[in-house]
Amino acid sequence: MSLNDTPSGERLHIGFFGVRNAGKSSIVNAVTGQELSVVSDVKGTTTDPVTKAMELLPLGPVVIIDTPGFDDEGELGELRVRRTKQTLNRTDAAVLVVDGSAGMCDTDRQLISLFREKDIPYVIAFNKSDVSTVSEIPENGIAVSAADGTNICELKERIAAAAKKNENDKRLIGDLISPGDLIVLVTPIDSAAPKGRLILPQQMTIRDILDSDAMAVVTKETQLAETLEKLGTSPRMVVTDSQAFAAVSRIVPEEIPLTSFSILMARYKGFLEAAVKGAAAISQLQDGDTVLISEGCTHHRQCGDIGSVKLPALLKKTTGKDISIRLSSGRDFPEDLSPYSLVIHCGGCMLGEREVTYRMKTAADQNVPFTNYGTALAMMNGILRRSLSVFPDIDI
Image 1 (cartoon, helix red, strand yellow):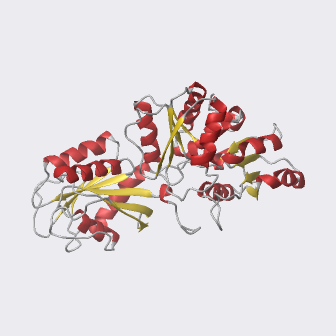
Image 2 (spheres, helix red, strand yellow):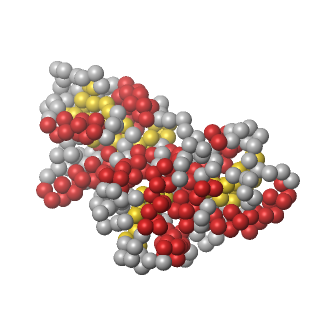
Image 3 (cartoon, one colour):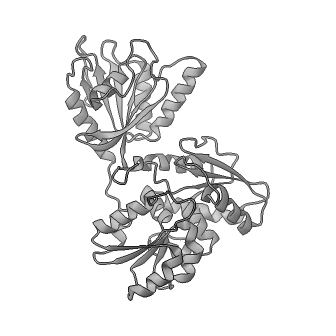
């Protein structure tokens, strides 16, 4: 990903659903103007969700998801249907593609029920209008043809209107600062840091500070004391990478607000309060308990990796208990969390808010505490209360 790319977690996710051979892939290709999906008269050509990050007017940066037929059969078909259901957890707006020559079926109605259950705005595209006429079209439906392009532009406008219902104007840090404020950002450069660039939460924080007409000073934790001395004035706030929490808290005077990129991201994604409550479960862990450490992205784990090395070591040191650790990454988040006493999730910068919320609710429904890296690290370093002082509405 280049520095100017919009991260997938910040893009609206548009999912196309329907039964086999309704023309989902043809509609996807017509809407995107690209040969994104393979098109065939053979039922079940799309066997796995196909995703593509792109620019789609009038929406802008989006992720398009073409899903397998929801009426797929057999053992493999059931797996495909399950993956399609999982796709709903990251869908901001849905397009139900109906075979206009056959009309709506029970499977289409089942999908509509799922959209409503998960509060996903949706549009119904009655395909094949070039060879058939739909007698009755609901208010949120439109007759289209992938073959001759009928109403494809209108469909894109409908999709945009549906997707914008889920847009929000939340800020990562901008609502906490004022124009002219000086913000110090502590960004360790170690073996886990991506070569040649900053990690995404750091990039996003810098951009939001600049958008707020404030000033960002970026430094390493080894130069933080010198940086604060050279500034000659107290910064409005210090934001640190969670891994450096302990060292940074010893350097930054108590009167200067201190928090982390991960805590800011948890608030931005809408699960900070749950993360704070979940972190309290760390002190209640017992011998034999299993903790799930989950990351939203996939990357090559290195020596000193926070998820697989640093967090497990600190957990065992803090609790003094014989704890088992399980790891998950990317889309591989388990639906059954009953084996776990605690879930510690990353900041979720590569996931959309809907998917992060789904994971949090999955844990809540199964009474499994759910927290994130930054909140857990602040708790174990004894500085959680201080790290939350910039959020007066959060109680611990």
